[in-house]
Amino acid sequence: MVESRLFRSTHRPFLHVNRSGIDCLTSKLKLGFASRVCRKESYSLDPYLLPLKLSASLKVKAAVVEGDQPQWWEKNVPQNMIHIHSTQEFLGALSQAEDRLVVVDFYGTWCGSCRSLFPKLCKIAEEHPEILFLKVNFDDNKSLCKSLNIKVLPYFHFYRGPDGLLESFSCTIAKFHKLKDAIATHNSGSSTVTPQMGEASESSSR
Image 1 (cartoon, rainbow, N blue to C red):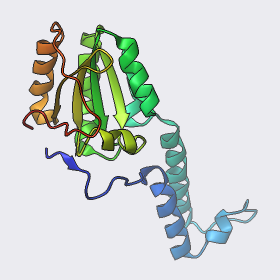
Image 2 (image 1 turned 45 degrees about the vertical axis):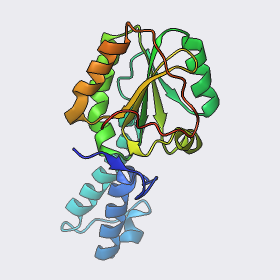
Image 3 (image 1 turned 180 degrees about the vertical axis):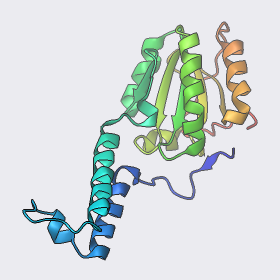
C-alpha cells in the first residue's frame, strides 16, 4: 500500500455519515413525493411507493446510528495512547514522559494507510504499556507538522526525553516490521539526537 502524499490535499472531509441521507433525498425528489414524507401522512400510501419509502427510512436511521459510532481513530484506544491536539500538548507530553520511550504517530483521518495500520498499532501499544504512544492528527496540527517537516503519512517519530529524537521514518502496513524493529532497538537504549524545528525528519529510508 502506497503512503498518502500531502501535496494533493491536506483535507478531504468525510461524507459517509450523511451519504445515506443525500441518496434518500435524491430518491424522494425523483419520485415526486418529497412533500409527503416531510409531514405525517393521514391517507393511505400507494402500495408501489411504500417499499421505497420504507427503504429510505431505513437509510436515514442507519445514518443516525453510524453517526453515533466512534471514528476509526477512536476505536479500542489503549490507555498508553494519547491524542495530541496542539503543539503545547505535544511538548508537554514529551516533557512529562522523561526517560520513557515515546512513539509519535502522525496520521490523517482520510489516510487509507493510516487506517489500515491503526489496529496493529493499538495491539503493539497494548503489548508495550511501558511505552507512550502519541497520535497527531495532521489536519488538526498543521503548524506542528510543518515545523517537523512531515510530508508523508503515516509517519513516526521516536523520542526519549523532552527533546530527544531517536529515529523517524514513514511506515505502512506492508513495512510494519520497521516499527517493531525500531521499538525493539530503542525500548532499552538511552542515546538521543536533539531535533530541530523545521529540520527534515526523513532521517531514515522509507
